[in-house]
Image (tube, rainbow, N blue to C red; front, side, top):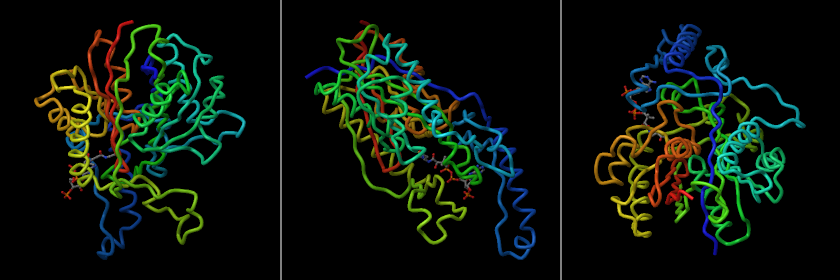
Length: 375
Ligand code: COA
């Protein structure tokens, strides 16, 4: 058996920022427009008027202040309310490939490695831009990697499930190394016309290089243990899929073709599931909460993370101990915990223990216990 390690990480951050102020202005203009168009129905009591969104609510309910997106013109246009992405030719790289390749190159550079050192690519993301060929294979080709590649989707938990798959393959010896990439274009499945959720998501791509520990060229994180769990729930759901046109009304502008959630239920049900999952994983590995130097959590909601951090550590986390990036990036689905890890791990020193955890739709939860080594 070989010992797997994370030797490099990379984050691709899209060029466009949307602030809460911009978002709320666009949403409110859209709501006014819908209300004006439906004034007679509203006056007759046949339709409820759309209500305005508010910056104060967004920050208080989620902790989110900004989000990055691949296109902001469509999202902020009250006549459009979704991203506008150019049609790409089949012979040019897809948008997910473009994002993932940028993140992957950063991860390789940090590890001091090239495409020749990589045996496999796993594209683990909440949404895949087409059914086939696998996005991962396109990324593999764009990077010039030999070996194999495949896509996987476990919604917000995709990154940790991908790390487990890669770590297990490295551990068994079937590969020497794998790139796990998480290109998330959440803006395309978010319903920007629904004030309950229009603030939740942003776009980003992350990459993690997993290698045999003896191949590490610099500081790295040994993957001591991984644990994944799932439990079916409809409380976060998206019904879009290839059966769409075969169903009555399937091609209509239907609410369920975008992200839907029962936020309150998610909050109540996922928190205990995640807290217990982490506690059980740590107990099984003999890791006490006093041993843990850092917690890199999924980035969906600040209150949620505060709760989990306190439960896991048994006290209020010290500043920096459980870093949040959601105020800048919003919820970036599977990429969130990896952004937190990538941007807040350089200061750990030899022997320090940390835990990466992502969770979300499915329900699903994945955790990775890592140990820092300086060389
Ligand atoms: N602006 C102003 N008011 C808003 C609003 C907005 N954008 N969106 C909702 N409201 C209103 C609601 O209509 C509701 O009004 P009511 O009390 O009169 O019915 C009130 O604010 C509270 O709404 P609620 O949805 O109950 O808010 P919340 O405090 O539960 O926060 C979430 C909503 C989504 C942020 C929260 O439930 C959450 O974070 N859930 C888990 C999210 C998550 O992790 N999702 C998983 C994806 S991985």
